[in-house]
Image 1 (tube, protein in one colour):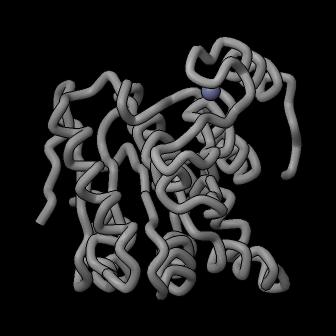
Image 2 (image 1 turned 180 degrees about the vertical axis):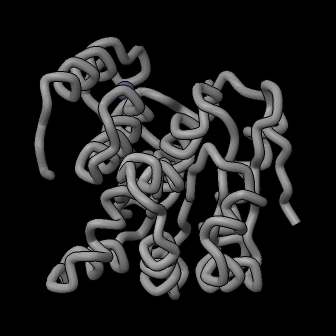
Length: 235
Ligand SMILES: [Zn+2]
């Protein structure tokens, strides 16, 4: 954590040096005549937040506005972001992105996280795989790990279900429920969480059992990729 990688520095020089709005200063004159951050600096702030939150580098450059998916997806995500921005509104806090590999689920999640940081500057982001969550669950001394997950403003849990196949052993219900349990226990306040899985929701329900019902009793949103575009269920 807190690393500044060569990729970050390259992106930074590309964005700041190429900016035609502020000439690379990072600041421009706003409507009231005062200096406001230029979009290039806002982009760098968002990238810094996701880099600090362990988001893999290949996803850093994704931006919601240029997300290559369906226009409807972007519009729905903006509605969702507006929901999340409104303090005290605890609806729709969990978003499940489900579907096969290589459909852009993680890149969409990261784009949304960056947009969230842009809306609420100083927000913290954490990216963690279900497999890593499972090890936090089994390490009963790792209170700090759970605390960190609970405190973060925006959580992305990737590869739900893969921790079972990666273990290459009997999937125990206890371990799987432990993963969801951490998500649920850690996310009782108003921080948004995106859970990504290659399983569909029915399989997730079947595999993870009762703990998922706790999520199901609350408002949540699903976006399931069938062919190319996801079917979004903004209820
Ligand atoms: Zn600029």
